[in-house]
Amino acid sequence: MGRKRVIDQQAVLDAAERVVGRDGAANLTIDAVAKEAGVNKASVLYDHKSKQALVEAVVDRAFERDNAHHAGIESRLDDPKDRAIRGRILAAAEPPPEEFRAVALNLSAALALDEGLRAKMKDNQARTISRIEETSPAPRGALLAYLALEGLKFLEHLDFHHFTREERDRVLREINWLVSVDTQEADLPDRPS
Image 1: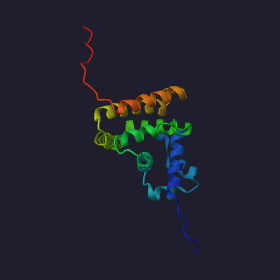
Image 2: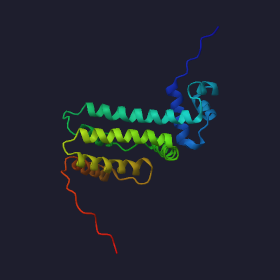
Image 3: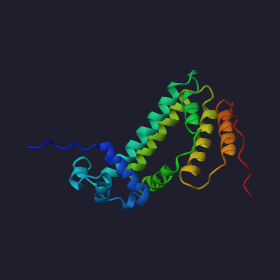
Image 4: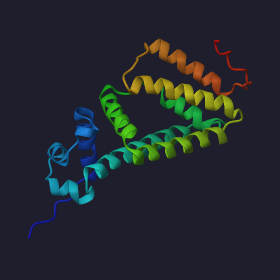
């Protein structure tokens, strides 16, 4: 009797990510992922019982990778204050790789259309915002910096706008400046009559 072939689940998720980037999450099929991974359909279905479960696994892994990436950068910072937001700013120093943009765009569409996936995103964002505010001596400035950083990433990851390297670096320096700003509330602009 031959040895049982062990399927590398990371390779299956890599294949699923490539399919999402190429075809979109809505068009992902178990067959397409199996073909991309070079395995049979039953091998994919063994660990991911449905297309939805496979998309969820891709999203979960994206969150895990993102959080681990930021934690690694944070751990190398000398100063513990503002560690959560400054780590995220440093992580954003490099624009997203071209090949990731299509995946980010298509996963964002899946998140927007699926309540369960949105709940995962909400939870991840709530934990991130909480950590940023808890680790900062100026939590409002740190929150504003995070909102600005997420806006920058949103524009780039979803392929809506790309800054030149010089302008992007300038924006990141200004976002970094926001971290320690002692914010003051101001009135909203008057509404036109």
